[in-house]
Image (cartoon, rainbow, N blue to C red; front, side, top):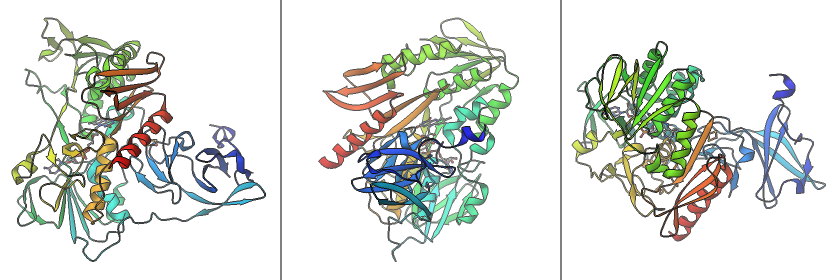
Length: 512
Ligand SMILES: Cc1cc2nc3c(=O)[nH]c(=O)nc-3n(C[C@H](O)[C@H](O)[C@H](O)COP(=O)(O)OP(=O)(O)OC[C@H]3O[C@@H](n4cnc5c(N)ncnc54)[C@H](O)[C@@H]3O)c2cc1C
Ligand code: FES
């Protein structure tokens, strides 16, 4: 890239722009020196922030200002306009902040400010001495990071039975699997981060049981560890089909970095792959294998991929998108048996394959919570503060079923951003913040270069209203029940997705 290409776009904000160039509630993308900076306005106040999202580099100026925050258009991270703090995941690092000055009808961006995130919980005398987190995934990591951001100085022990430190799991079915992302994109933080932050991360450390009465966890090696607060964030594990051949060496499921590396290793010599299941993960894997040039077949029982979650319109579109990229679907069919070089289908046919990936769903890892006697309701039952039936024990992420203020139902979802945000709220609450988890569920999925964003939660609906054209990749699809919008899926309508999220959250908070 030449230097002229890499120069940020827009006006030089240090030279100033007319006050009216930035409307109230609006943003303007510009630069200060070589740094991309966005100018945002609330009433008479102007804010200047780094314009590039610290998650995957989304252009914040194309997002939305909501109150004193700016939301990223790509995956809805939320930054404080005042401090640049990444208030809500998936971004975890702040953006820079600059001083602004208004004079002579112009607003100018001045010096860069050194602003540390302001703690949301006062470090009280009653802070727990040791917090133990079971799980080194989305929720567990976000919790540990938030605890230190709150200037919590007590002990944090993070136990994970995985061999890898916390990773960017969504990448494992997308760019990293496709070969488009370097290995250093995958860890959420460098190895030194944990020691620097005083987070005692213990990998390959399984937790065998919890003793609620004595506030102890028992490790798989028999050692015991005391906690003052415990966060359960054990996530989910892939469902393994019980068909013959599942244990063959060319058959994989995908959850961990090791799973992903094993698939990449096999893909290097594979020519034809079968993906079992047209789930989000199954289809993302299919896209990544196609990017690697492997002939890819998807076998799934449904009529249209993703129809149960996204409805028939997006289901049909996603199918055609994958077919354009050469994926061959075998729908309304399932695998009956796997052999070394082929997969036999229930309807009688067979597909030659030297790589098989099963993406047929996941099961929450509930055994610890069940054994401890915590209340279980198809997940660990928690209240709006993410607290389980035992007041010192919190749960977050794929295992947690919480009272969702928007749908009015107790729900459990398997979304990266929800898990991270729950980890963040659980962290605040373990320090005594008493903050409700009331974020609207959000997830994204990526197929080739096409992102689909989804806000809300609709397990069932009686109407689907399509605004725009799904096939033309420009749409907002609303899932309604009795006239009420429960969820909205969008393709290339990022601001509409953000505005829907803000409106639905606002409406719920006002009625609370
Ligand atoms: C390949 C892939 C792609 C995905 N893509 C997307 C996406 O695009 N968008 C989206 O919204 N969601 C996506 N998801 C889902 C998302 O990753 C999960 O919802 C999220 O990781 C859940 O976070 P969690 O913290 O609950 O669990 P996890 O991230 O799974 O972490 C659980 C942790 O607990 C540990 N653990 C479990 N039991 C024990 C025990 N007994 N002792 C010690 N440690 C234990 C595990 O080793 C792991 O470290 C994807 C998932 C996968 C697998
Ligand atoms: S790039 Fe901003 S939230 Fe992902």
